[in-house]
Image 1 (tube, rainbow, N blue to C red):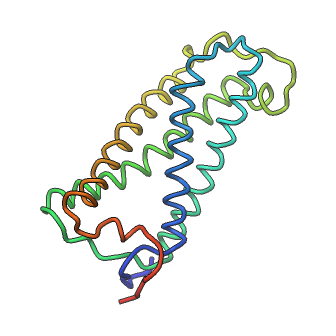
Image 2 (cartoon, rainbow, N blue to C red):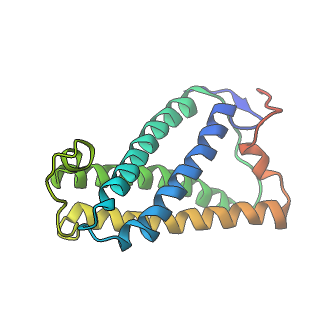
Length: 183
């Protein structure tokens, strides 16, 4: 791990943050608003699952890269705004994001394995989708994890907006681009 400090996060980490924000938001929205509503008997469900599963794999790869970049680059000192309790909450939220996103990937992958979705969705072997995924405990865990992650994302966005619009304390600049200095 790099012990040096920086004025803001590495540009690669900032880029990964925003790419992952888009990917995770899109995947959650697609899962909640589209996939849940389309029965497994609909032929278009295969294309939808292919997109959703592919995006899940991209999220997993980007999260692995993010971990490596975070480990190898200097990070800023704690923001030093708010109370010590809010700083601890921010740290726990950061850890929760990693746990929940990797949990989403793991439960999605496990559901795919148990339901043989790789053969059905990607190889298009002609086998039908299961009538419902609800019978799979991994799918139920995927849904619960998605709900908790969506709540955490909403709280994160609200906290970011609070720092930006109410506190105006510059916390948002830490995840922006340009003007990075090593200390």
